[in-house]
Structures are given as structure tokens and as C-alpha cells.
Image 1: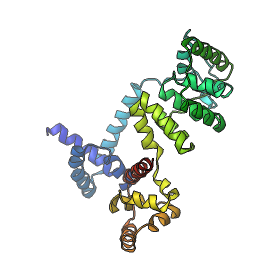
Image 2 (image 1 turned 180 degrees about the vertical axis):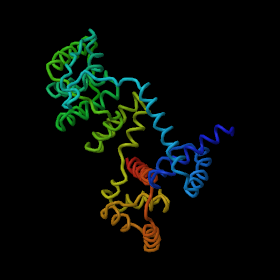
Image 3 (image 1 turned 90 degrees about the vertical axis):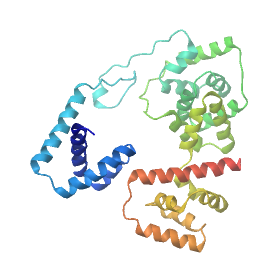
Image 4 (image 1 turned 45 degrees about the vertical axis):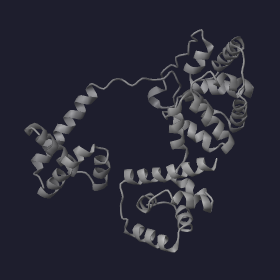
Length: 318
């Protein structure tokens, strides 16, 4: 490395050494492995050498200057044409959506809360026909906003694969857009389509869940895979039957399981212990007793591995 690179590594290490150990561990865990290997000894050296106050202030000042420079070049955030309850947006007028002349495209582009409100008042079959013309991401947004009764009825209609001529679809879409424009626009939550759809599917029966996932996979396999990853959670193991829990535990190594169980609920812990042999339970309890603090990122990664095992068991059961 050049002397400039060495100095840069040294300054970053010093800055990291000033943080709490848990915060530093979480940050370093996100770095590439090569950079981590370079930083780790420098961080230890910085913590042990107790640099002068002047040196610390110099590094902090450089970091503050960098942040200030980045803020100056920060691009303005885009605002949706939606209403907002916050003080800074209270006086901003809501820009009405102007139809493009293509009603199906309008359903894709206009405020999703307006579309969902209109769909609530349409026949479920009409909604299903129109949703077949929209993107999986858009459908995920809409489904997450529909009431449970309407959502279930729409899912049922989607499973029947309803069809209509292009002319009928256009007329349906045109009427829905006109109705949607009569409802107020609302701020759209900044969550991913996969997260929204996963939340919906968690409240849906397994048969309906499978139909939706298959429909999404036909249009966007990548989104369907993302939904499957979001659909299952570590905590779900507490709701499984004994046989299912045993199958899940058979797919997860003991070390990963111990990390995933760090600070988990008593209910989940009891369900896991109740499905282990006496020897395995004793070994796991010993590992848990030695756990004092674990980085949040490490616990989340372990729980994601358990969630993946739950997904595999659930899909194998189908």
C-alpha cells in the first residue's frame, strides 16, 4: 500500500476505536473481508496506544468536514404527490394525478392508496382481471392495503385465472381510475414490494399463499424468491409442530442455532429445547450460558439461516 493508503487506514481505525465495541463490530462486519483484515490490527493498535487528544480531534474534524461536504452535494429528495401529516409538508399542495390516456398504465402509476380504495369498491373478479395487467410489485402494494375480506376474495378470483377482452379490460380500468381519483392520495410507506407481499401472505392460508407466489413467480421469479425469504421468520419456529421443529433443527448446525437463540423469547426457547435430545439440549444450554453479547448483525444472520430452514420444511411439506 502507498503511504497515503496506510494513513487513510490508520485514520479510519482510530475513528472506529473511539466507538463502543458493539457499534464498531456491527460496522466492521459490513466491510469487505480484505479491508477488515487490514483494519483489525490497526484498530487494536489505536485502542492500545491511547492517541493524543490533538490526534483524535484532528481525525474527528476531518470526518466532520467530509460529512459537511457530502451534505452540500446531496441531491434533493423527491416528494410524491401525496398528503402528509408532518409539519414540514402540511402546507404543501397535493398535485393531482393527470391520467395518461392509458387507464391500465394509470393504475400502475397513480397513488397506490387511491387505487386500493377504488378496488375496495369493485367486484373481486374485476379487481383480479385488472391485477393481471399490473406488475408484481404494484400488486404487492395493493394487496397489502386491501381489507382482509376483499383481499381473500381477490386471491380466490386470481386462482381462477379470470380473463377478459382488451376492450373490456380498458373499460374496467377507465372506470376504476375515475373512481380512484375521487379518493385522497396518501403517503406511500417506503418498504419493498417483497416485504409488503410477505406481510400479506403471512395472513393468508397456505393454499392461497401458494397461488399468489406461483402467480408472482411467473412474472418475476426474482421477486418471488425475495418474498419467500421475507415470508418466514425465526420466531415462527414456536408455532410449528414437534415433527416440523425437529426437521428444522436437523437443517441447522448447533453454533448457528445458539447464536439465533440469543435473547429470544422463553416460548421459542422452550419449543426448541423440547425437541432436542438430552445431550443436545445440555450442549446448547452451555453455549447459551457463555453468550454475553453478540453483534446484532450476527444474530440476524443466524436467525435468517433458521428462517430459511423453516421455509425449506414448509415447502417440502407441500
